[in-house]
Image (cartoon, rainbow, N blue to C red):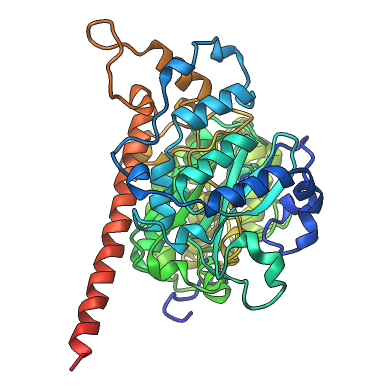
Length: 498
């Protein structure tokens, strides 16, 4: 269906297939107190201690006294052969969370201010523990309290949920009333390369390479352009998921308070490829094309030639070529192309794409099938092979949780780093730092004279530095806009006083 105008109207990468998850992990947006009762029973002591910590008085000057990120004494660590340890090894994770994770920046990003507010204090965090138990409705007044609980529980990863009307830890006392409800959350999008398995030929399932990563590059370009140009959103952060996907966090203030209906409208606006791999033609659009789709075609047409036809060669076999023929609406044209390709086995996808125009011009098509119909059919094919394939359910619900930036993917060891759109074409997921590599870089770090420099944060000694620097600029931009909004509101209030 044709995408609707935005003026008329937003998941996380799944665990590995062999991993067994509690039922709530498969659908973390479901609000059911019974879903983690067993987990809560086994974690009562640590969670209760976290509650006590939350209630302690916190000196802000101790938390925000400098620009480092809660540095720890390096002398307590001894170099280990970390390269040979798994990313999920407890000691590896402990060192990463203590020495490299940007806790203060995460706090400022979610809090929208350096001073603690309910934007952070009433925010839900969910922990996936080492035994695969899933602990929801955790909340923390400060970054340091979150850090302490993470170091106590050592989750393999943690997820970020919405800001609630009350502290998530108090939800049972409030009961199922309007006193406890989600109020705000970033609008999120999730794109996973497994959803491209029917069009990529180089890899499948959890495997990726630089060839098929280009599908992610295309998707980011198209979605980012729509969010900025069609909706006017500004604060959009793209994050590598650690293995085969990317997440978008839209953080503008006007976005965070959107209800589910508005989120569904935006998600629907961006959804073009529908149905499963076996559902036949998956792109069916009204003409004339909506401006968003016309712009998307302009972005994607070059990628289609180079990254699909040339790199993927998607119609190299007779079976795959039949799929292409099935997307052409004229039977006479299909029969003519099939005969031509049967007579020339091994013909490349680039040549087969050119054959469509050549055979049509030779008159081997129905008289009612004109050039306009052919152009529209080819546009639909380009979009079917290149347009973003969103996990749309992630964007529809205010209370959906999504994996935090900068956590470590337990399978690959790669850190979930932000993607700099200014260098999007150069982003290589296979070169993203691994936790083992980062810890080895710290051990190997030496100053210009052979002695370790003092006062240098551990993350600054590693290849994680450009990603944290990029995150810092993004967070500063949000806080600057939030502050400007507050100042403007105060001035307006003053002007109303007589």
